[in-house]
Length: 295
Ligand SMILES: C[S@@+](CC[C@H](N)C(=O)[O-])C[C@H]1O[C@@H](n2cnc3c(N)ncnc32)[C@H](O)[C@@H]1O
Image 1 (tube, rainbow, N blue to C red):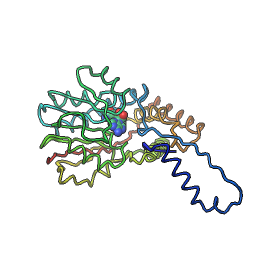
Image 2: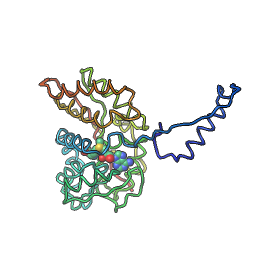
Image 3: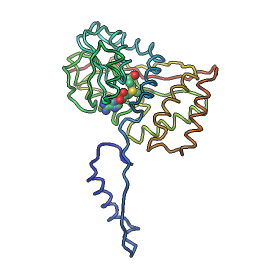
Image 4: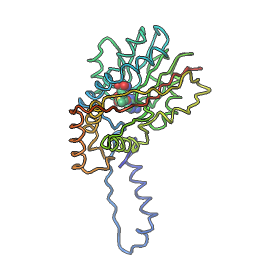
């Protein structure tokens, strides 16, 4: 199983080297032939299908209030250019545009499908396909950049945030929202969360990027203005609906440790909880950070 953009030739070379140095292979007297099968994992586990977009629409509704509060607190008034980094199908971009009142708002995402969907969701805004692990961005330096639940999917979130700060105009702000932890007593949801963690970790990323960012010192490229954890209670059936949509997207991911039957059982239980009138809540602890560029 291969994560990342490794050329096939290099993979074959590494397998050959491992084989040449393998103690067991070297102790055999017979001819050994190695025929590897490489399974490539898409870099972003949560996909860009219609289902993935549906989940992001629900996510946008559920977390609208705390996200707007962060943008209101952190963004300058009527900035000339606002960027939504990892915009998905455009719900967070529209929220950023409405809340900041930016003169120009541009959503950036690596997924062509999400960017096309975003152009349908918010035709008045601009969208660009670009891999956010690469700088410079194909735009002029922004006055505000906002990223919600994107660093959770990228290896080295602190390094990424640092490089994003360099893409801002002097004094520009970077607003980040990432999960610190998700608190629930429901065993099925706890099980789901452990699987989600594993699927993302197989890409070298951390679904709970909040604790990694908590200790981030961006000097000399910037400074932290605010670093808070906001608690946001979500009705358990709504949380289960989000998780059920997710599992449909990555239930057959190469990094999924469960057998297909077990995934189907978990799916059925999540669907049941989503349709229930369970009165419990699941509490998201969301790290919200405001940083200012020093460049
Ligand atoms: C969990 S979604 C969040 C979408 C949006 N920010 C929101 O809050 O609704 C993560 C988004 O990051 C995008 N993404 C992941 N890796 C990326 C990369 N390397 N460059 C650009 N976008 C990326 C995905 O395509 C997806 O749209």
